[in-house]
Length: 116
Image 1 (cartoon, rainbow, N blue to C red):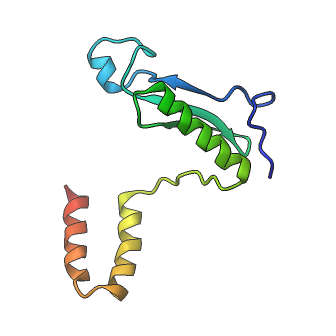
Image 2: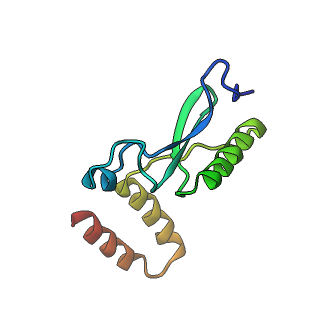
C-alpha cells in the first residue's frame, strides 16, 4: 500500500522537541524547551506515528526521520508492538520449556519479577 508521506493529505512530517518530559516538568521548563530528546512525527499507512529518536541532536533526529520515511516508502516499516510483561513471560516460558534445561529457574525469576 502506497503511503502519502509528503504531508498533503496527512500533515507535515517533522521532528519536534520534547513535549514536556518528566525531567523537564521537574525543572520547570515549558514543553518544547527541552534539549533532552527529539521526536519523529510521521505517517505510516494513514496513521500518525510519533516516536522518540533517542537523541538530543536535531540533525541526528532528522536523519532518523528520513530513515523512517524511507522505510515507509519501501514498505518495510513495522510499527513496534506493545506487549505486557505477563504476556511476554508466557511466550518465553513456552519457548524455554522446549529449548532450555533451566526453564524452571526462569519461571521462578519471572514470578518474582511480576510479583514485585
